[in-house]
Every structure is written in C-alpha cells, then in structure tokens.
Image (cartoon, rainbow, N blue to C red; front, side, top):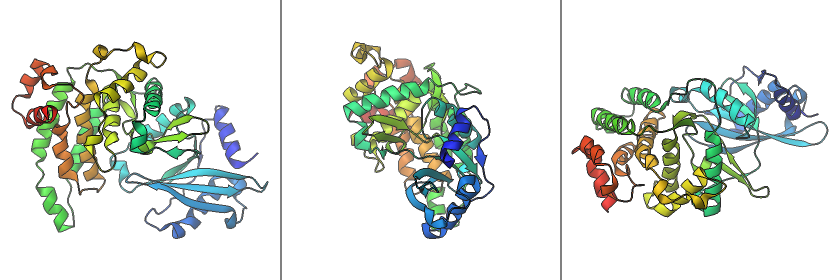
Amino acid sequence: MGAIEEAGEARSNGSSEILSSSLSVDTSLPLPAMKPRIIELCKDIFEKWANLDDSCFSVKTVSGGITNLLLKVTVKEEAGNEVSITVRLYGPNTDYVINRERELLAIRYLSAAGFGAKLLALFGNGMVQSFIFARTLTPPDMREPKLAAVIAKELRRFHEVEIPGSKESQLWIDLSKFFEKASNLKFDDVEKQEKYQTISFKEIQSEVSDLKALTDRLDAPVVFSHNDLLSGNLMLNEEEGKLYIIDFEYGSYNYRGFDIGNHFNEYAGYDCDYSLYPSKDEQYHFFRHYLLPDAPQEIWKANFVPQPSTYLVVCFSIGAILSMVCIEHRNYRNNVVCLSNLWWCLVCDWDQIPRVWKADLGGSRAARFMKEYIRS
C-alpha cells in the first residue's frame, strides 16, 4: 500500500489524526529553489517516502494567487507506481482575512460529503491534499447551460452540508474585520499611499450600513456558503462528467443569496467585464436547477425573490476591501464604485424594487447608481 492510500485509509477508518510536519516553505523563493524544501517536506510527512531519492519527485506549479500557491508533486514510489498530491502554500499575510481554523473544520465535513480534495496533512504554512485530475473552468464555461445546471445542483448540495459551530451569518462580521484592517493601512510606496488617502472610508462605511439595513429586511436563509465560487474554484473531469467545487478558505455560514450573487458576479471574469454578467434568462436557468434539480421546468419566474442581487453589491464591498488587505491595490477605487453600480442588476426594472426600500435609500449614491444602471 502506498503512502497516500495509507493516509486515506486512516481517515476513512475514523481516525482524527491528520499527518503533520512542523516544516514551512518560503513562498518567495522561485520554484527551482523551493523544490528541495518541498521534497524535504513530503519525506517528513509520508514515512514511506523518507528514503526515496530526490529524483523520484517532480514538482510543478498548478496555480498561484493572492491567498494560495498550489504545487503538484508527483512521486515514483518503490513499487514503481506514480502518485500525485497537491501541496498548498498559504500566501503571506492571508491570516488577516482567512480563518484557517474554520477552514480546516469545514474541509473535514465537506470532504466527507464528496466536495473538494481530501485533506492528507498539515504543515507550518500550508496543507497537503489529494490531487484532482480535472481541468479548471473558465468564466465562459460557467454560462454554458449544461454546466450552469450542474453548478447550480452542486451548489445546492453544498449548501445542505451541516458544519458544526455557530449558524449565524458571518458576512457582516467578516466585512467589519476586513474594513477595520483596510482603513488603517500605511504604505511605504509614496504613490500607493497617495492613492490610499483619496479613499473615503467614512463614505464606504455609510454605504455598507445602508446595505446591511436593506438586507436585514430579507430574512434570507443562512447556509454554509463557499463565498468565492469563481471559475478557478470549479473543476471538471470531462471523462467522468464530474464537477468539483474546491478551495473552501472563505467558507462560512452566510446568506444563500450572497453565495449565488457572488457566483454571478464571477461571470465577468478577471477583467471585470460586466457586459458578461448573466442575463435574466441565464439567471432563471440557474435558479430553476438550484431550487428543483429533478424538475427545473416546474419552477416559474414568478417564484423568484431577488435576494442574490441585493447581496451582489456586498460581494464588491468585500472584494474591494480584501484587495487592500491582501496588498492588491491597483483597482481598488474602481471596485468601490461598483458597490452601488450593480446592486439590483438581477431585478427587471427600477419600479420592481419595493417602495419602502427606495424610501430608505433616499438620495444616496447607491440609489442613484442603481437607478441609472438598471434603466440603461
């Protein structure tokens, strides 16, 4: 039995022990310099690999972002078989925005429900997971009707998983934490500091308060949400026809509408081209397969309540503030403008917004942007 099979069998037999190592890996190193450290880490974690020659290990970059660096490690074991694992390195300063304890708890239960890669081991600044043989989706893939239907069904199933702990929505708690850190930054780079000082955090706080007051009226269902369902966190094994939802680092109990609205937001892709935002028909198609997977044709448009649109703007708020905390500042002011710009983009007309909500919004910047955007 290989090292990975042994680790997996221990987990399936109910063992609460996860393999671990005290070693860490410097993420600032280039891959050639990082490779010996990765090999040392793997040998430290998996006893059956301890005496293998370094030439038995292949290390390649899978992807890299603000919060993660993913490496594929392929190992030729003594029996001659090859196995692959994923080594996931946490990005610098990401503990400011990611609750790693909450993430690890969620991984255990979501993995048991068939979501994502299996957790094999933990180390100083990351984790080791099983390797998923599948391709990562692109933003255009997500709007393909058959795939959109599968994503909707899988997201519903994801939302049905029960994770131990408080069932209170973490949306406003997390947003408040991000906001506090973003509003107290200081940059050594003079140009960045000058741009930072043009941001009115008081105005942003006011807009967020308006949003909270509005969403409090919805009495929206709270479910365990992914909170980052972009194309990069969806993988498809086309031979098996299996879709994988991966990477749960932002996962928490949250409003169901937020998770769906955030997913729709990701149709715009990394270039933020909001002309690609899903049409009403595409949205209804998704809703039908989410609400009634076995008989989506029985769901009528009249049954829909525009909760995702209300939470969509909160996605922009979190995205903008996170970009500050994670040292990604270039498009921050544009993101802040988007807080209001797409608030009700799932609603057919301005006149469909409840009158009492309009009154509460008054002449705020949010209301002006909402009205102008929808009517355009």
